[in-house]
Amino acid sequence: MAISPEVADIIRRKKTQYCRFADTNQFHLFDKIAFPNATFKFAGTDGTVLNENGVVFSWENLETFSAHFTKAFENVQVIHSVGPGELEQTGPDEVKAVFTVIYHAGPKGTDAKNHGTGGGHYHETWKRQGDDWFLADLWMQRLYWIVRD
Image 1 (cartoon, one colour):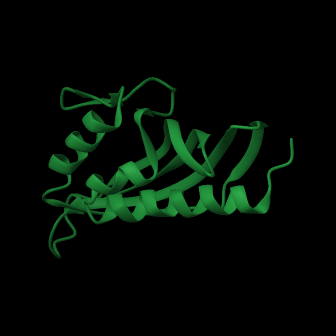
Image 2 (image 1 turned 90 degrees about the horizontal axis):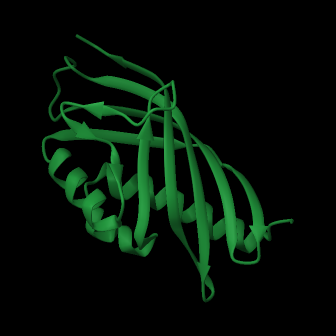
Image 3 (image 1 turned 45 degrees about the horizontal axis):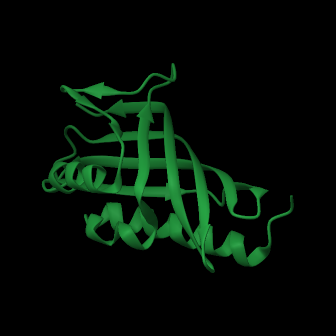
């Protein structure tokens, strides 16, 4: 099913907001782009969900996802850059999207030590609510990650 330019614009704009809100630690604004029951999973190159420092990178709702990253990003600076995405409308109320992402992260400040660069793909499901669209499911596969010592 062909996707209308208007629907594509809404989803792409909200994906850009996702990046900006994350980069500026404004997770309280994610309710503008995601459903309360949205799921979020982050996987490594082998497809298994990441487990770093005892944190399993899988959240079953927006509240727990936002709470984790609000705290995690208190002393971290990040920047995300996404491509225009591959969008496929799979039904009148559903769009599947794949966005490439490159991101940089590290401790706040100017010291380059412990800064990392990563990349991968966001695989997402967006659903219609009225005339608007919201993120319902996100699965990010990290394909590249390197940290500078």
